[in-house]
Image 1 (tube, one colour):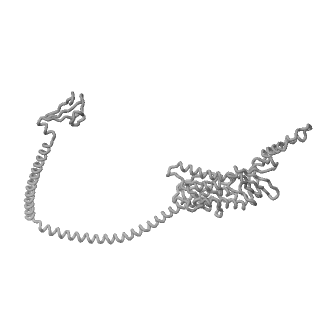
Image 2 (tube, one colour):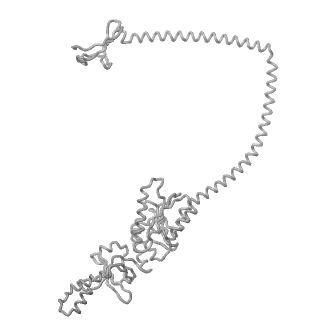
Image 3 (spheres, one colour):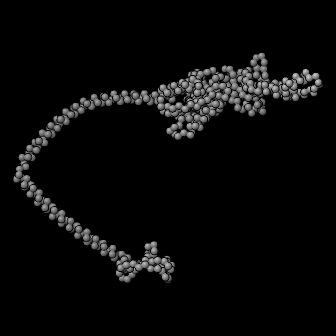
Length: 438
């Protein structure tokens, strides 16, 4: 553009003048090349949301102003709607509205700037998500009682990760940490955090049940309201709510509240506090075990002392009882010995021998009688079985004919010429072949 204008001013030969359209086109091209991606900060005035969906407003710094336009195709991605009187920071390119020859800033992205704007944007997003029920207590999931693996979504170089790592390694040595690195500040940080939350869930789906992530910490250390703004992003809030892994939000300091804090399952005042929540379960369990061990040791000592006293008394009673039993048994043995003379023993043996002989005679007679009864019964059953046997008719000259597969043949229609048959006679069997049948 510059060469065209200079040539037109200093060229001695008369040149064809530019049309207004041509001039505006060259000015527009030069502006867009020179100012294609710039950040501008100022106060919103004259804001209008057109029926077409486009946004029109002025950006004013108290001394100068520039007209701005944010097309519908761009502003649907912006989760904050500007308001008159608040400060914002926009990124875009300077262009020229050729039809009117007006300079304007074509906005590509927009974010609040200053405490008032940040507060207004925060309330807008909060009201929208709260109206959809994303903050409802019924949606909050409990943190697993004894988490074994924790994902940490934060900057790998920030103080937040080091605080979390220090607490967990010091107080919960059995918990493994999966770092999911992300931007936590500046342009694109909200999308980076959201993508990290989604990536952690997608990675978790590839793991076996025993290796899955139990809880996710999403956060960063302290900073200004602008520094923490990424954690107020609407899409990030929805990703946290849709996460299959329970989420602890740990952003900034105790006084800082973000949309992520409101939508997460648990809000921790600081990243270190989030780590304490995870590690606290293990410490509590260890403390309970130590306390139980001490109580059990004291109880065992008490029982041992009490048992020892009872055992001493019991041993005394057992000794006394044994001595009494011994004296009684010795007396019974003495009396029995006095009665067991040789003559008495011979008489008892003789009587016992007679009894045994009588019992043996009775046993032999009973066994013989039983065997005879069983033989008679068996002979009777054998006779009945023989009478009913189909083989008994063979004695009278009859035979039994069977097919090759062993079936008894009753109907000649069941065979055809050439089939093999087995004919059972009284004293043997014939193999035959069918010649004909009728």
